[in-house]
Image (cartoon, rainbow, N blue to C red; front, top):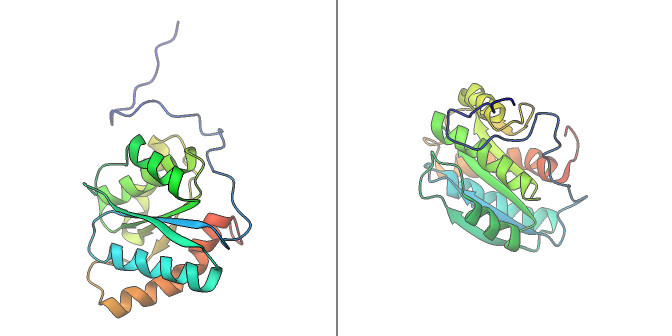
Length: 182
């Protein structure tokens, strides 16, 4: 009998890297319900709300059906939150990974949504690429992809946040629909 390898972060052992964790992607967002998960970082909610508005206006999303703010940016979402999103949303956008612990948690969140059948777009700043990659490995999905933007987000003005959302919109759409580059 072999002993299991334990995850030092306290999480349950995940699937092997070759398991297909990505949820099935819709061809387009028209008529779909968008879920937004705010991790409490400064400017994250404005960024996500702008993304939601753009997805409705430019891609025909039916609604932003659920918007939640995490109680703690550094802790991955639990099964109860994932279940609420799964019943109220067709795709999820989350972020902003703008620090080490929130970036790791954002990647874990994206993987949890994917495992529940929800395509997820996770946004991290470039300063925390290694943190995200490490968490993806811990979660058993070392090749997990997210959207990377310039660091920082927290110090941007409202207009700069809205411009950043507009600029990243094509990558967000591609992430949740499996479009170009995915």
